Image (cartoon, rainbow, N blue to C red; front, side, top):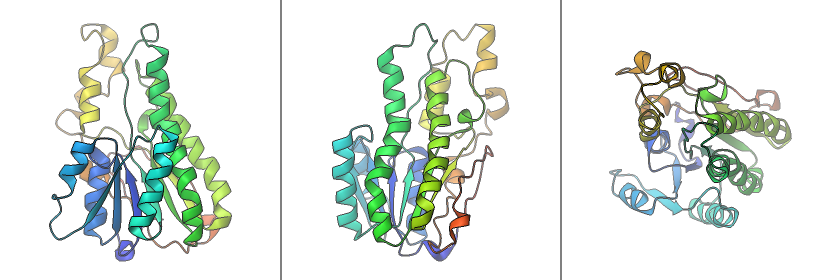
Length: 256
């Protein structure tokens, strides 16, 4: 990541854990002004004293709640004095057989993983335009590219986020706003571990086929900080540089 982040005003959702927290850490180290948004008030409180010599602004909100998102974006803009970029890292998982999956479970996954980023982008868009352009990074998943058994809702939500990013990139280009989706593979986070532990019927033959290739990743899944190399660089790139990038690599660096 380059020093182009210095002074940039960035909103990060899902900021209290995993890739979101690693992104907050990396961006603060690069000199960005950060607003950390999460629904976990206790975890957010722990962030405030975590970074020595750096100020992290925290905002509590549930990205699946329209009113909560609108108020949170307004607070973030007021705190930061504007907005130059957004990282949508909030997300949840669901491991369930199709016959056992309840509609409420399906709806919640799509509400957080797909509708949530849309609500954040919609609320942030006028502020990015007011800044003369900016960058939106949506954290999708390799599961949106390659399906996983027992994760119908999760895979669908992440695939949908990729296409939403592509479509919005076309719309946003004329305003100098770039929209990208990144698709990390397995990363050692609480979400990853909970998904592995929740796999139904571990004795079933399909278990080994349907989970996150644990044999391959056991002891090798990268830490969240290795997946936090997300660059929100100069906002003055020409419109043709506005595109949606997908990668399934375990570690990645995205410069925009």
